[in-house]
Image (tube, rainbow, N blue to C red; front, top):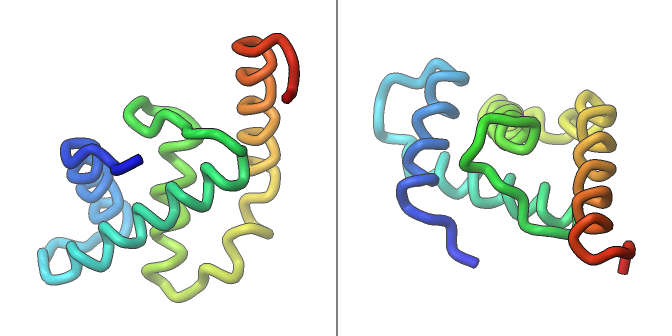
Length: 103
């Protein structure tokens, strides 16, 4: 599913603020990082998460982009393991409530 342009622009502004980027030359690369981070989190949880609301999924996208920007993506999973596990648990709980089972 394609990411809505408005959401992508909103996330871009948050990522730039978090990384203290004030110029626009990096926007295309940052948008790719955002899309990759969303795909990463969706794959870890097994479902499409809602990144339009303030919450752990959105925060993890922003932080993963910061790690990517700083060429430290290899450290992200270890440093955010607790948050990733919590996100997976919440996604599983939501799926269970919606479907009545984990399948």
